[in-house]
Length: 369
Image: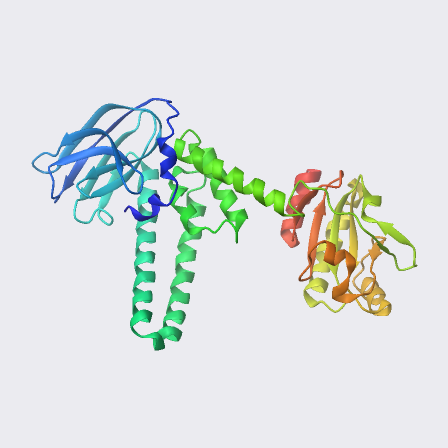
């Protein structure tokens, strides 16, 4: 049960916040190779023990009214094994486990979040064992790569389903901590951010969670500094031609909430998305919402026909008719369309790639209906 919590910044718990708690933990750990048990914290390569006890004849133990510096993630250590528990002030928890198979056979009474965390840790451990097994097979017989990839693809989809169910069923719970080890903050920052914020909401008094949140804030700042389209930054301004040959700037729309929409007449997904944009415009334009469409078309005729055919009734349509060489598209780093940027009344970016139901949700937040 050590593997995943080791990777989750439990070293942050060394930082003593000193919001002292009192807790009761008792139960029975049978079938062990030791007669001692400790209430500890685990830091990857060492334990910090706080209280110790002798196991009874049937593995009974009790830590009564123990004083601890902080609510946090703790372990019951016996020999080289341990069981994870979450302790808050006034926790009263009973733990029953098989000391030889504590990753599988453990029962918690009085701490659903500890039980849920243990359940997910078990899923993670099994998944890691499957990965290790697949790698061992490939090492011995590289010709099995195609079969292994197919099998692991199916098993990964099953694991992702379990991962999503766990997140959905444990919102704002301290049990979410091990989920962070399965998320790539670079590839899916939104999911990582959502879990960190839920942990902070549900267990923000934990020094471990405080350290996780500190790392998150640092990553978020670095992303903000390196991403020209990061939420909160000013949308890069540009000037482009309207169909009548006149020009307009994005900044001409300051004071309105703007959906900057990169599209083209030849783009099937763009055309399928257009009804959603039209519906949003019709619903919110009276409140100050508008659309500025930047076409990546090559011919004016195709561009104008698509505008008319799709009923794109807003007046702000621009294009330099340079296809993928569009200056505005290059400025915004557009690599595929449709690509959207939602911009607030002050010209600051709210978000990118906001489409369909997500666009409706964001506009509902802004306009209140």
